[in-house]
Length: 305
Length: 325
Image (cartoon, rainbow over all chains, first blue to last red; front, side, top):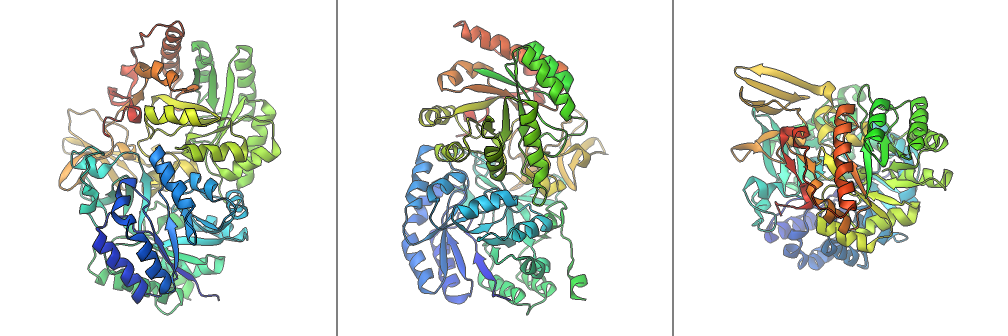
């Protein structure tokens, strides 16, 4: 079997410049991930902080042999944001991941990626994007395994990618819920979203972990963990597996998933190691099983027989 | 501005026509539309009769086929488009790109509208749907401000329709999996949000707990009115504070903004609520008809008399005014 592509998704959270630079340095030097995403996906207000470092970060990643993909904003609303995506679409020598349909129009005919914020639910839509030049298509989080298999079965020229680790983005809004939680307006947000490295934990009123707020974005509290189904996805034709960055040691996390992709580590062992990293972490894979996304269903034992 | 009104049943469609709708929109009784609730929506025969009735009164009918076709089962959605065209609806409201292409290729003369579920929130996105699929109207997501809508209308070639009254999504539509995270069923895949089959109410001491799937969405004291547990309208805890994290339980009412929306170049106003009964439809449609007629006569007296019908009896102008900006 061809070696699977291991992908480090874009950093979704508002980490400070040093943390982000350090993160990318370690990914460049200490991991064998194949592809690394850079760029701001959630909030245009955050862009000025890291834009100045992007060229050097991209260069460093490329020099260490990584394919670099520039991810775009998931929600593009005003004129300033439209101009930003126009600028990005004209950047030379870098693969761009479209997370809003506006970018698809601007990139038509040139090689690009379709991101998971774009609704690729079926073969008709997948074929359309592949014909327009999409080289790789990252599927939305809520698809069941049956849909993933059907999309792989469509045999388009585009690679299929699925997120296998990290909190799942569940919604995006014009409104900033990090600011709202602190009684601030969006324009005077003081970048409070940066206070929470993995999003602000949201619990139900009876103390059950539920969601995580990251500015305009709402994520799951639970971490997607799909190691049990990686072999099944590889067989179905998924070729790229995305890890979504969190504040735990992502070099170790990527090493563990590389082992699972190569069938050298047991999924159970991987989860054990993740929990050892002393990170409060509930796992979820319900979407894959046509169940509530927050649920976790173990399926591995049967496959191993 | 055209008044586009909801109908979940033939009776509601008759009520909307009688109350002064310019257009009634509805869906087939299956997962192809975003109000796939038990007991709601139209069979093929019912839609045929509905179109006949509406056209007799000079009212148009739009068919919403605005969920995302399931991989391996696209023909169900293709058939819905074929049947809507054969029945003679005046426009089909679509969200999925594969389905838009199907409609464009198989029914080049059909009038296609872009559903709010496609969340086309900027000029480049709208241009994409117009150029690629010949979309003639876009229903704008409820994230845009009035100023953004005005600017947009100056730059695009297609008509825009905005939400005027009813339930409000605070998240960008068509990009939200909150419901399926808790219940396994989503607007995009199943045409439902926070579906009733997954709702439970529990008494705990003096409080009432509303739950969706395995999650508590709100806890009400005995003196509070218990609401439906729509996920994003719930009360949660973050940083040791409890409250409505996303949105208070309000609903949208733009009556007071109608002249501004017309000035901003909006072509049509959409009333939300295909799940509502015919009495509600009559009242809301009637009130908007009156307001629009007054504006057409040059009068600007457009105060809403609809507040008793609102969720939580509280109105908001939503993102149009952006008090939270």
